[in-house]
Image (tube, rainbow, N blue to C red; front, side, top):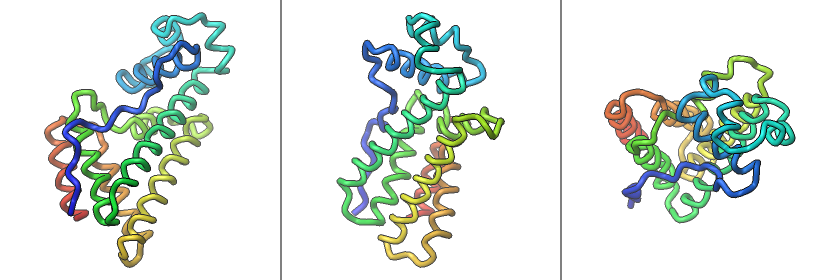
Length: 194
């Protein structure tokens, strides 16, 4: 039996915003980078909104690029932990695959949705040597490995090829566009997967 998505979208994995300078910097940068875009947000804005001194930022991060990479790494770790925990509660391999699409549809329906943060970052980080590119590649490889494992558990033939197709469907569902179009596309991709 397929598990229906929770009525609320998956939690946006951002840091707790505790008193630690690094936590405040990452929480602020994460919110601003996701909402406004990496290029549109300068270091001075992050410093001001986080309420920290410039010296504090540079004591923890050598540059904006390092802050971006840390934001992406933290977000990736939170997404991975959330997905692993959610999938642990679902027994049937096919239902576990479908849950990824249900999760995406619920997220897309949330008013905070601004596209997949990893795809957004990928489009903004044009330089191949940007430290965030390694984080993005690692996250994508993790997702592909997860899908391949789930497809294998479901008993499908040619798991790597099918996982690649499912990855393309999930990535398409996370693209930014008018919410109603993206939600409809996400539901269609889930039905295709089923």
